[in-house]
Length: 580
Image (cartoon, rainbow, N blue to C red; front, side, top):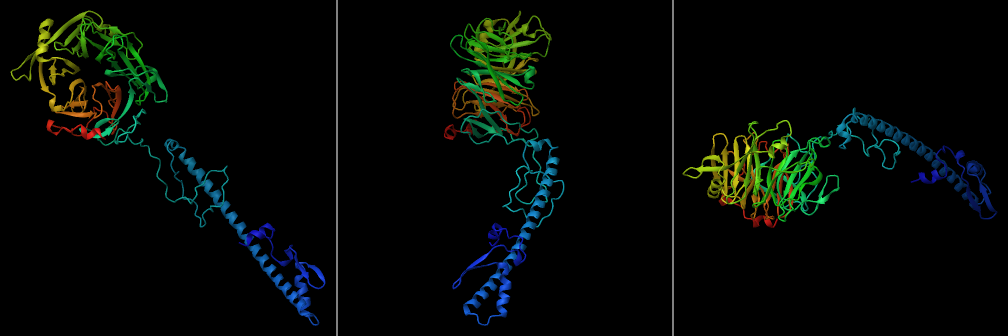
């Protein structure tokens, strides 16, 4: 507390009374004002001590006061000098500590510059040696030079802090989101613990009730522009009534590793249908949206070709056609030979195991809708393979011969269309989803809740009910995902209180992958990305297109935990979830 006034008077180096320059003034009561230098105070005191006789008491009192003042000044001056030296030593100590700390920071920063991950994820640097020991931490009143490397506000620890982690950001939350997200999911680890439990519906997110271990985001809404990952939007709105869809690996060099998802538009007004295409990069982020087929009507489902084009089926009685579409929009769409006679075409599939006799199939959503098979007269493998669907060929029709139990039998292909139509009306009316895997052709008939599995080699089939699969609506489109555990056959659903995606495993069990307690419309557009990590699904009337993925980062065709199978009696009540 005594340092401040003496600093102001520059007394920090005083060591004796001879160095004091401050004058002490006093007033003599009888003879007027007398000014005496403080440096003469000691001599005046000694002189008066030897000769005090004849002096008045007041004079002696003044001499005593002057002597005392001189002593006080001497003591104060000596203390200031010592204090100044202490301040000087303290500043030197702080300066040395700051220099050592800056040197340590530079060494640590140099060491961490070699680690690429530290440039991306901030972390405390790991010192290459123990920091210098100090008994006095830097004072909080000392302000570091802003041009030098920053120093920590407290002494560094002797134990290095943990290095930066390379783990990605956490997966999407399992809690319901207040608003639909449009950002692409972050990269997910490939060595994560398996957490996917198909059929165990525990997560409500963005109006979807998901199986354990799944997450979702909405990527498009009918009548609104499609949000791109860079913050921009599409020039046109996403189409209405999204229906059948498929994913194609992007062969364009500028989008290596990416893919395109095509989606039919089932607009019922003449010429208002078509096919839209959304382009994704290799990380599943949206890059572009455009229409690749326009001017058609009620484009329902469809299917992919072996050469990675899309066949879109018009579901218009007597006049519906099939259209081959380039998913990248670089080639003009063209009407296919199969389906050119007109009909309520639903879905398309192929069996190309025999390159000399590739087979193409189309289902019809009609009470007498017989499934058709087309064999082209010429093949163009390695050339313009597109042409195979537009040249001459043979069309024949499916006929089944059920056993007594009506749970299987044999089948054949016939050129008698009327016989085949009558057969379809009796045994497999209104066939919808169709898919081929290996030698098996899968066909779903929605009105009778039946799944047919045809063996294309031995010409036998089995059929089974889908009621135990808890379909609230009617089984519709389907896709097969094959993995190490035998694979799952996935279905969508035509309407219902909890319409969603269902699956069947190799043991014949049916279960629910996801459903919605909010949307009542048909689930459509089921397809998977080339790496199997993204499932795309739409709710048609609501116009919502979703991306669903496994939180453990594994593809849908990878191993999963035991499925959660529900019998009809254990079905959840819709109202339990609507209020969430």
